[in-house]
Structures are given as structure tokens and as C-alpha cells.
Image (cartoon, rainbow, N blue to C red; front, side, top):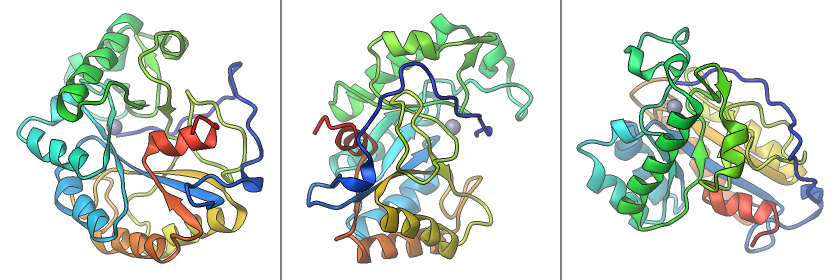
Length: 259
Ligand SMILES: [Zn+2]
């Protein structure tokens, strides 16, 4: 569930060192990749996480509060296994034009105050699951309008999160980044293992940071096939001396010099 968004360089953009020139990973790797998965989909529990575990790689899962019923224990186990849980709001408010949904989930019917309350409530729920007091946030449908007003300015000062993943093109991975508009490259239906490997190999060659987004893996919707996902992970595992795969928050912390 996402929409193409125009990533706008906002006034709080941080000027970061040229990533290509410096080591980002914990062992001197010059390229870092965060694998992120949205919407708390069962195929992520059934297929993506077992594949990640087999490849000894960690992913970040942006959970929707209203979608985790029945799988709380499995998400808790995923966190205990080293995967990161992130905040994707409670109701996942999206513009009504994108797909059919009940009116209470339409972003047009929300407000800045409601959206910030959702993010705070989801942080509390995530803390109950993983014990952590800080969580990254991913914008539902890649947009930040609530009741016609942009809630991102309020979120920047609300101290509810340090990093916000957007859903938009990631460029070449070496550009300065706004921590509240972190670009991402989504893969879905029709994207092959080869397509994804070509992308991450570009990051390997240039150095820098890339955030990859998925929905379903071998099921659910907007999915990549299980085999394509496995091929990507196999490549990442084989190139781990050059490309560090980390949780979204740790990748951003390292990229912004906080670790
Ligand atoms: Zn979503």
C-alpha cells in the first residue's frame, strides 16, 4: 500500500559527509543496505524471515497496529531473533483514491493530531512487543497528509521518532539525506532477483546507503517471489565483506555519524 511520492528536499536536510568516501558498516564496509518490509504481512513471517535467518541477515519490519492480531508472539520472536520492528501507524491512513477502504482509514478523514497520536500509540505497542523505547517510522502509502494538512512538520518536533522512511526513489545512495524523509527503493511484482541484484551491486560499486522496501514475499500483495527474494539474500550473503546489511535504525545511525 503505497503511492509514488515526490521527495522534496526540506529545510532541515542534513549535510552529511560523502558516503562513498567513508566506511559505514561496522567492519569498514563502504556500502550499507537496510531491507525493510511493510504492513505486517504473514508472508514476511512465513517466508521472508526464515530466508533472512538462513542467510544470517537482519530485516526491519514496519508493523501496522491493526494488522498484527494473532501474530504478536511471532513478531516478538522476530525481534528476539535480531530483526528490527518499526512503526507504520495503527490504522495506516491512506488517500481514498488509492484503493477501496472504509472511511475511518482514509487520510482525508484524519488530522495531524490524530496521526501523531497513532504514531505515539504504535510506539507504545511496539515497546510492549520488543522492549525498545525508540522506533523508526515509515509513512503509510508514502504520504504525510492527514485531513489535507502535512503532519511531517509536527512530527519533526514531536520527539516520537528520529527516522522516517519515505517511499520514493533512492538515487545513487550517495546524496545527503533528510532523516525525516529517508528515500527507499521498493521492489514488487515483476521484479526479478536479477533486477534487485543489479540495484544492490550499484550500491556496492559506488558505496553509500540504500533502503530497500518490500510488501509481500512469495504471497500477500505487491509481492516479489520467494525465489527472487532468496536470490537477493544469497547475493548479499556472498558480498557481506563489501556490503553491510543492517537494521534501518542502525544503518541511519551509522550513515549520520551517530554510531
Ligand atoms: Zn504500508
